[in-house]
Image 1 (cartoon, rainbow, N blue to C red):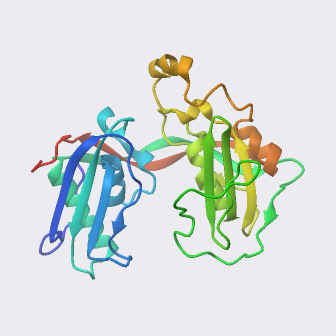
Image 2 (cartoon, rainbow, N blue to C red):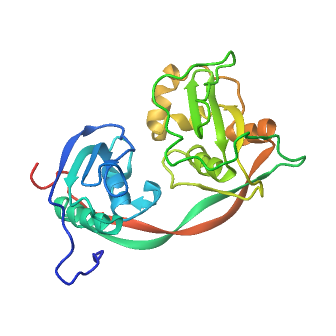
Image 3 (cartoon, one colour):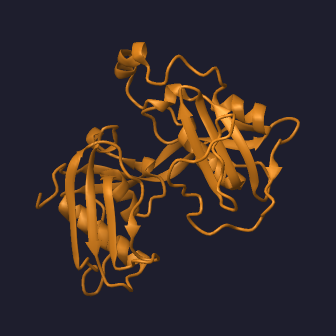
Length: 291
């Protein structure tokens, strides 16, 4: 069982907090408010998977590093709405301690840490070098500047037009594959982005590390087809929907691996597996206390 840090007068607690079971479905990855934001005394997270809440509470960057029963880590997991209030001067560390205790109590949860092996790739320059164009503005953009809301304008090739001056990655997907527009993106940014496309359905997260040696920020476009990864379901369900594939007959575009080399002069090279701290949920009730 995981032991929560000890405090002389007990661990800090929220002034008030609730977590409500909603239904099955996809989560919203954004928690609003909390320490370091414009609303430090209140947090709200609508449609959060339990593994996302646990990752936030235990400072785990990737929810893929959360293991546990299938109802928690599988697709179609139940989603929850989480709200909490606290003193406006609460530190990020104390907020995490509050959230840890709250989740353990609400879900009657037991969990532990262990090291697990994860598949890894290095992002490197392909033979002949990269084909990237350096951004005119090389300054570091403000945090969260890559968030893009609404329907973007499109160019004649099906790529979104990036808002001027912002660090952004905008994906347009459909039967014609993925068309990605990147602006003021570093190679470290790109490596993190690629993690979501190299992880096969149902497997532990596959990580990508920047080993290109390319400093600075770049503007570029990338088109590819990850149709087999786009529907993250088991093989039986995949076979059942094959006849009426919502992605259509296929775009004819290359995979992400080939697209990187052909269009950007970059390559994904298999690296040695990495050992990462993983939180393993041994038990949790699906229905929180008080629902």
